[in-house]
Length: 329
Ligand SMILES: C[S@@+](CC[C@H](N)C(=O)[O-])C[C@H]1O[C@@H](n2cnc3c(N)ncnc32)[C@H](O)[C@@H]1O
Image (cartoon, rainbow, N blue to C red; front, top):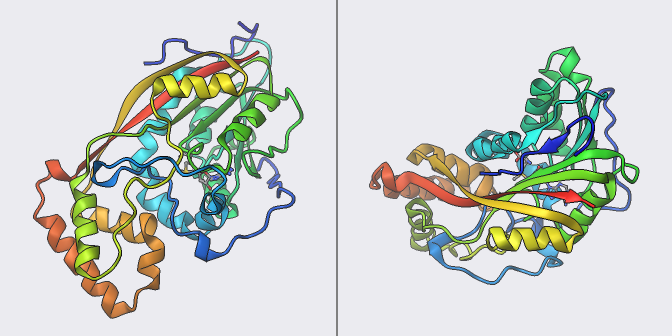
């Protein structure tokens, strides 16, 4: 245990706009940007083998999140925010020996990092994200903080596997709902390992394969098929964790010791209107953007008609997630 007690519970249940562009990555084409949302797969309850991490469509999150940053922030981030903020309960960041330095990899809207600096006055957070669009959204979150909190929250545009920090520069590394999106999860975790000091801690949360079919997804796919459009691929293709035990093995493989992973659930009550907005603005945004206005209006009306036949219980989405912590040796 460190003297300043920056640790994570074992019982899991730009000050100064330092936007740091990362070198050597280019904007990928929109054509590759369609498939991978931040949502876990599992439509129709089917499972497919995870797509290989080096699949070209998995390397395009920067372009996708640049394009959908606002739709994501409005329609999807609030859905998983309770689970993201659940990670706070794993952190014990009180310090009696000066500032604790934390990095939040794939910080998205910045809501988690903002909550950390609000709760712990001795913590400095570096939020990193590959997408300039998401960094801009996070900058709004940062700007809304009081100066004393804002000055401890820095933002950097950087991919998870090339963090702009020195070796052993941080005490805590966190990441929520990001590791299923990165081109190479092992490399991203090794990079978090590199920037952590020996004895530093990692805390992550992410999707787990499985979970019940969601009736709203089925209704939407049926509307696509009725319109003569291809339904979304079953099983998605993200690299979700397979189980808590698998999450622990992933962390061990990346060199972390004493991993502890615990299952949990994310539940969200959609309305027909909020589900349609989520689909059109985030999850299947590229399809909706490509439709002629009249075709789009017909599809939206049919989706709403189908969703309005579902009971409120059927509009409740429940997805398995995992929380995990481990130590950098
Ligand atoms: C589903 S969001 C989660 C955001 C935030 N961690 C939260 O829980 O609210 C995924 C985020 O990961 C970012 N991202 C995707 N691929 C990334 C990569 N290779 N490196 C860093 N960030 C990445 C996206 O831009 C997006 O902001």
